[in-house]
Length: 354
Length: 83
Image (cartoon, rainbow over all chains, first blue to last red; front, side):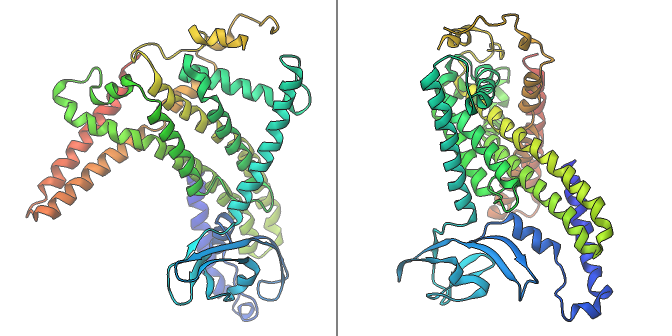
């Protein structure tokens, strides 16, 4: 549904853009045509500075930005660290310049870019926020023990319990406990960053494929390193498959090992990016039509999608965590054809006493 | 230590949301696996045809069909087991 919307609005906005120069030829001389595609890609992409707003027009207005540190390493010149404001508006500094947000050197030599970009800065912010919030929660448990939770602790306790009981115990089974730190971290990391991405001026961190790739690779590594012999038996001698078909099925199962985290990566990336694009497309419609009369309609739709994104933010975090737990559960399971409802079973009940 | 829990477990009913989510999630990657299986086997056949300079692309044809078969077989197998 969302992909469909995304496709429709991409086409709609480009069609409108193509029509625009003919409609406003007299205006085009003093004002640059609004390009929704460019604006949207700028908003969902990473950047070397944190841009909040532009007052006035693009060329002469004031840009409200936070400059971020650029850290570049060139084998010949070594390390250079400077503010990204030195590179603003295509300026050249120290033989370096930005080309479509890619740091390149003027002489074409190789540049390794370790800059604190907008996404990295946002990641650091969210890591600090997560640390502050969850050390407060942990302090609550240290102080009150199993007593009634208080304050921020009582908000997060049901969510943590939900992840433990409904996700980890049911998917992984008796050995769930050692995977709880990863599952909780990944859940709250994705959820917090999804929400921070929805804030005005926020970075699109979980809609960045490098971030989701890292999360998916972590899931893959944890799955592989915790796998037991049943997991590999299931892959190399799948139960219920005739011997003659095994040469075909082994590659399929091996592909499956990689495809599972790959789909995790793409799902999170596509959902968050698509949501951002849809909201921005609705807002762009005002500027595409160049009229304030469409604003109530497009803003209502934009607000609706934004509310939907609040739901998607927690849903995607939940799905990522659930699937991670299920993949781990498949890797640590003892008897492969046993029941999948590990819920109220053996190890789960004793865990309540902890 | 902990308070007496409301023991009748309502969460064991299959109508429960997390369990339904689990069923949905279990098969959510199935399409990606089909695409990867068919795509990779076709690509392997295409590469082999280029490598051996075959006149008729037999490798592409056979491996594509094999990949299609394997993908479909895998889907059927995974949805019919553990009922």
